[in-house]
Length: 502
Image (cartoon, rainbow, N blue to C red; front, side, top):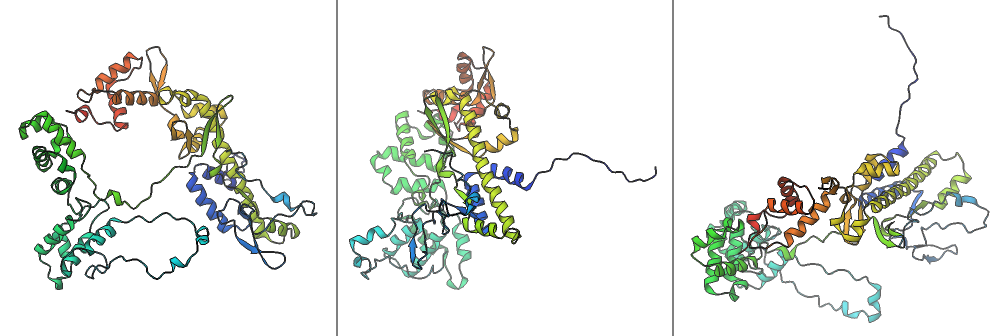
């Protein structure tokens, strides 16, 4: 064939930068959205956030003095008064939340005592000064500090104290000694000539500290330390303590499997003594350092709040997660006076407008999807998870005229506050389970019903997966035994053998 040049017109769909930003913002969680906005605020001077916690600041007043802004007054550049003749207010955008309602270094040094500051600086403050300082949460004592405080008051040699400090530095957050004594000894400088017996003595000193069980190298050693030196064993008879110690020392796998018949044969005891020994072991702490955990608990802030109104359940946006954005008024007036004179600021102005519009559109879409979910799951908000109906993404997408991928982005990492707690929007979507009447039920409702059945079972005779399937069939739900086992594992309920009690 002879080569030739041809000109053709073909339609092609291209994603504009504005549409790409809208899609990206839609799939972000609330935390990720705030991080995105903080980055945009730091890069674009034309963008302002009215709900910035640092909005209350000191600015230069027109008379040259300092003027303290009122909380919520906005940024340092105030808006022009009405009737000033400047129409720069056209560049002000409404706040996006208008729709919402309501081994350590120095291990060989002497342990310093944690004394009190006697300088008297704190005593010089008057009572009226207390309101000038925020009330901060008290710092939690770490496990390492707690142990070092006790070590400072112990009667031991300087060398032993330094060795115990070394072992304290090798503890994990749960209070266990991760490394063996031989490994720790190899890490020490050879010039110190530390003998294995010295480390063993230091370990004994460490294990004598509070909390009981700290410094153990495994769960068995931890539980044995608590049985021998803890308060839990002192309220039990000597025979019960002996049986509990034998179980922890030699039969922990059998106890984990609830193989009580094997334990009775191995320990030559009756059911009552075995039951008391089991209760004693359950009172022990498997993680002795858990009370000194460093991390603060994380909390989920809901994006949508559902309340009962006059016409039923209504979804509203949470005003606490809605950012209040607008265009900087001073820069907007500058651009109006110098049209075409500053291309860089003009581009940033357009980017700021896009961002404000896309953020508003993001929350509008979340609210639409949330209300559509509420309209189809009204029985859940009135009766709980057992009344959940089957729901798929396609049903919401067709009702709102959206694509399934858009609904998937909206329901991922977005949370709703319901009368039964905070749940992810994905929670309302479940597969279909057939019923005897030819209808269908939600798998979420089946799991909730199974949870109630397992909660009401006899611990001495727990129900098997087959028995649960039969009970569900009596209520009209066609569920196979394998499906029951899958749902049970999803609910983190152990199998029947591990739920059996004496």
